[in-house]
Length: 222
Image (cartoon, rainbow, N blue to C red):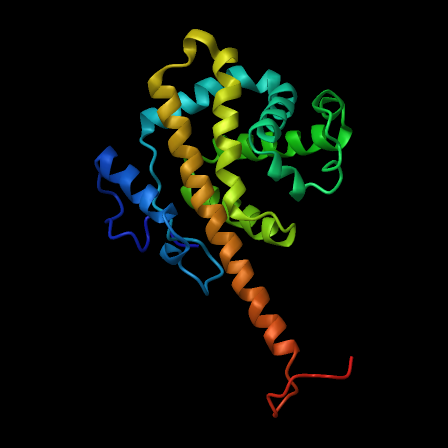
């Protein structure tokens, strides 16, 4: 897989101003049209984090690590409070309206832990940009198969940041918040790219499956 800078117009090894890195990441997320299709590798999402931002994320994660189960539950409870339509994606507990009951739901707890595990793996790969991008890209592909559309992805990052602020207390600074926001924007951009590529592949496969070899006609006997 190519590095995270490929296709961005940036020469690897050169320092990029932070403002430019942020604008590149945001523009990559701005629309589906900005994503590259037809490739098995990501390689088009510019990496927005400076070394100091990586350090801030790593330091704050060390504090959060002991609370990941609780954080995972709170993130999704708040997500369902602010965006109840998100529950439609989760067939195992989408019919549970009582938020207190949801807090005790084993499936919700397990999903919250999986999301925290993804964040933990992302933090561990901050110095391995291509592996980090591939991790998020593949998660986006799997979310297409789960029928979880990209419009929900950014909500999780917002709720994560809101949840961890009171845990970190005075250690939560504007600089720490900016670093986490930049990381989530990057991850969501790579996930969206994976989702749309999987969607495109799936559409192509279905189209081919409906055609008889050599005729192009639609199969009518199944």
